Every structure is written in structure tokens, then in C-alpha cells.
Image (cartoon, rainbow, N blue to C red; front, side, top):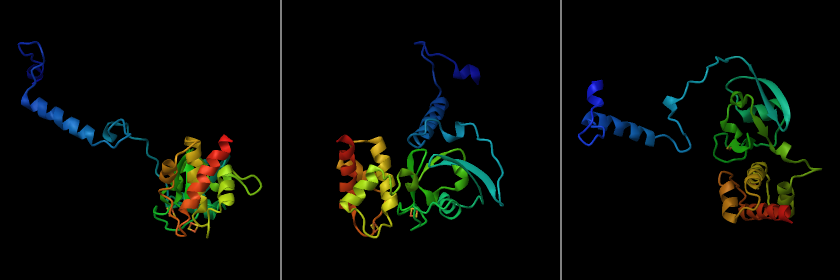
Length: 211
Ligand code: FES
Ligand code: FES
């Protein structure tokens, strides 16, 4: 078999058999099915070392708003449960509890995530920022100030999630376009319909930074 695969044509180029060609195409098709941004097919990666946890509480440690934090959690608990019920960080709101509304948005390693869709145990060693860490009433972030100045809230239930998404956007794009603002808030639902004011607040916060 090896001799047959390595044979050369008269031109000197490798002379592939029909079977070799089909195998190659199969691999190419499999490669095309790899999700975007995933450089290596999952099956080709080394399997991570597995650690058996639960069903009882397990220790997890992460950085929360700049502070090293360790907490005992049951493996079934979401990050949102742990933030609200164990760590007294109630800024992220529980509304749908199924990843549909964005009211529980927090930053995990700098990226917005729905805390109701992340297991607390998966935050081991990671960096978390919640609305409490973005600013305080005494020292608000410019995004928080712009929300107040623009009157960009009604009931306020979506507001922590909206502000967190916009804070993350302004870190990535200090001078965003309206389209970028809308895209950044696409996962945050506002039942009161304050979207125009929210967009205005985001652009105002960006202008303040420039000015
Ligand atoms: S409560 Fe998490 S997305 Fe709605
Ligand atoms: S201000 Fe009420 S849900 Fe957005």
C-alpha cells in the first residue's frame, strides 16, 4: 500500500489513486465544518485533564471586580446564582434565566456574557467584572453618567446589562458608530423600549471621552 501511494507519474508529480483523492476531499470537508475562529478541529486537540467534582460544594476562585475571591459552590450553580445569592452582587439581574434577555450581562475576561448561562465552576482562575465594579454612585463610569444625563432608563431592570455591554463596547471601540452601538446592545432586551435613549447615552459617553 505504502509503495502504491508514493508512486510518481511520468511528470514527476505524485500520482494519487482515486481512493487517496476521496480521502483527501473528506478531510477537507471535515476541516470546512470546523466552527469559525476554531483553528484546530476539536478532535485534533489534546483532551483537557478532567477533574471529577460534585455533587457536593466545590471550591472555585476567580477575580471579581479586581478582588481575588474564593467561594464554595455546588457544581449545578450558575455564575448569576453565585453572584447574587452567595456574593451579594445583585446588580446583574435575573429576568429570563435562559440567555434570552441580557439583564444578567457581566464581563468574563473582558467579554460580555450572560451570567445565567455560565456555570460558576467554569470561572476558575478567570477575571469577572460586574456593574458594581464598573462604577459606584460616588464615582460612576462615564457610561453610567451618560445613562443618567440622557434619562436612558425607565423601570431600570435592563440597565445594568445595557451599561455593561456599552462599557465593553467603549473599551473595544472608544469612538463607536451608531451601528456598532446597536450591535453591542443586540443581546440586551428593554421591555420599556428605551433603545433610542440608550443609543444616545452610549454616543454621549464616547463624546465625553473625546472631549
Ligand atoms: S437573565 Fe440571563 S439572559 Fe436573561
Ligand atoms: S428600562 Fe425597563 S426594561 Fe429597560
